[in-house]
Amino acid sequence: MATIFMSMSGEGRGHATRMCSLTEGLKQDHRIVLFAPADAYAFLAPLYVDDPQVQVVELPGLIFHYVQGKLAVLTSIYEGFRYLRETLDPLVDLLCEWIERERPSLIVTDFDPALPRAAMRMGVPFISFTHQHFLLANDLSFLPLDLKIHAWTMSFGVAAHYRGQFLTIVSSFFKADLRKGYEETIQVGPMIRPDIRSAVVTEGDYFLSYLRKKTPDSVVKEIVKTGQRVRIYGIGEREPVGNVTFHAVNPQSFARDLAGTKAILCAAGNQLLGESVFLGKPVFAMPEAAHHEQQINSQFLRRMGCGDFVTLERFRAEQFLRFVENLGEYRRVIESTYRGREGTGDVVQIIKTCLNSETLATAPARQLVGG
Image (cartoon, rainbow, N blue to C red; front, side, top):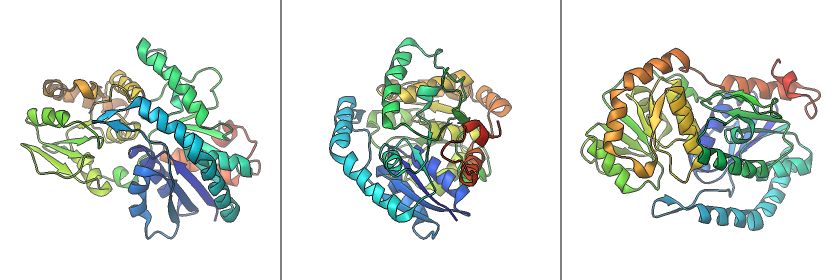
């Protein structure tokens, strides 16, 4: 039984959900240690508190910062530099001690800068398994000019997180052509947790919404103005307002509500978009104006014909109601092209092949995926 170390970013639930899906696919045969900061730790720790095969360890990590409900880009950048200056080196030292003590056979990281640096120092091969690396690997020439510029700028930040990975795996709800020089990048579909994969899909009389904790109250007021029955997760439990109810984040109840909803009204994180399309649910996305990765995700969503979007700050009730009028067409596109697409089995098989490879540190990626 091999020990696998896995780390992730702590922002939102997407990174944690991806690692949860991967953990469920690997833990029957391997011991898993999950290094998780912030929201990721809060999501994962309760799931595995009594699981002898999985250990969840809380670590500091990079997160976004908000001021009055809006993404504070300059503050987030400043705090990121402070993390690099004050936190990263001691954290890498600590993780090297973990590696020395536990002797993992393989390390997998989802956009965390610390564990890969420890892996390289200790000579342990690691896999990059993210969504964000699409900014480096994929052809984004179809984007509007401003987003192309932002994607180019953000790609430097992605590259700076770490280098030297044995494999680069990109998990996305979409698939795009690879840029020259990135042909070895492995593209897989979204990671789908067992409770999502096994959910009984129905069409209830409500819409499901997942919002970031710092979503302005003005957005909630616009959702109430739609008059539609909406179940909102992510901003905490509150008293109902009109036809809108507010729910604590719970993976099981959220999965049931996702499987039974008419459609999704949510931030534009890759993971939830992937889960929604997997279940055949159209999406109305609300990316923050300053969150360019989510804006790019939303452009792909619209291009695929699986939904529509407007920036969070410009969201109005009538825009969502126009989306509702076109649900039939969105469902038709999803059913005929994208429903059921996922990457969990692919990634599990890649990792198992890596662990069985006698040339783990040097084998070309194509040897590990049957290409």
